[in-house]
Every structure is written in structure tokens, then in C-alpha cells.
Length: 71
Image (cartoon, rainbow, N blue to C red; front, side, top):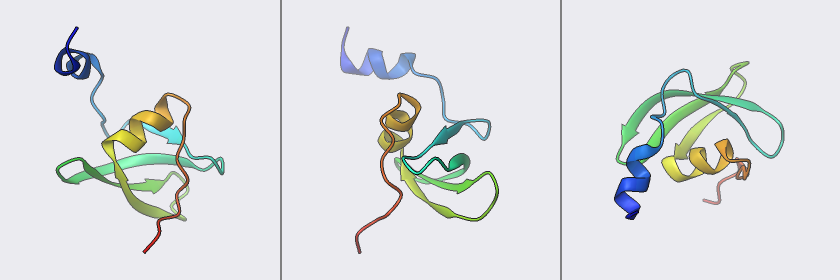
């Protein structure tokens, strides 16, 4: 199976998509903004940030990235 075929089998990231980061905060998808970038916020609305598609997929698989970004 090629990488493209494997990628197409994955489910789409929608507004119903939920995941947890390493600190245990539950995140939800808000909107897609640029190629591979997603505007996301925590379910309780206390935090917001940009996540890449790869970070979201890793978090869904149980390998959650930290939410801190270096400037």
C-alpha cells in the first residue's frame, strides 16, 4: 500500500473530532485555516491554538504532543 492510499483511508478531521494532549486537556477542532493547519480550542474554552494535521493524528493515536510552542 502506498503512503497516499494509507492517507486516504484515515477519517477526516471534523468539528466532532476530540483528543487529549499530554496535560489531559480535551481539545476540539474549530476550523481548518491553512494547508495542514487547524484552529483548535479546548472543550471548556480556556485554551486555543493551532495544531497541524500530523499532531492531531498523533494525539488521536495516543502520542499527544505538548501544547507549548517555542517562539
